[in-house]
Image (cartoon, rainbow, N blue to C red):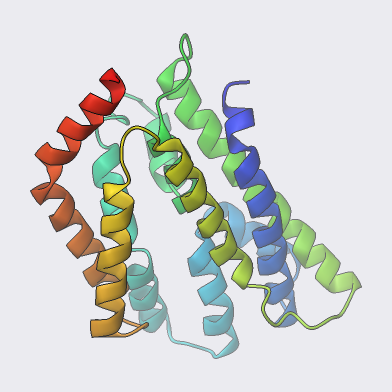
Length: 230
């Protein structure tokens, strides 16, 4: 009950994104079974979109592994920030690590569970619900793709749109705490985009953001404490 209301924005986004993925996968001749299997076992939205083009082009497995590693390297930084929260969670910890997508991380990092709610149960419920939304959207999209034929150009932009919505929500929730981390992320991203180009900027941008946050850590913690006191 505590997790469901907080995951509703992801439900809306994942249904659209999942449908988009299912449609794209169906467009290269892979149907409902493959959409469900990939969403259950891989469960990596952007990597699954990338996989569609890689499969269509017959890319070799070593190339697929390298490209997927580079694309998902950002999860290294997500994982570091969740080490403390995921300690002592027993057998569920493995699934929680597997299910840590961008959107799930955004929900878990945005705040602590409600009062009188067990954190382990809450983290697991959020992760499982988001996973179910993604699988449902993928299967629905693949099913629709088998029944209706239409142009899927631009459908993959749905993922970018969801990221924008989550960023806006976190910006609104940061009242009283300042927007320095978000502004730092934007600045680092823009600079690295200009320096490294659109194909290579992601990892340098993440590294620059982590370095900047470490340098500004004391200042940000002090401002956060003052905002909470006010």
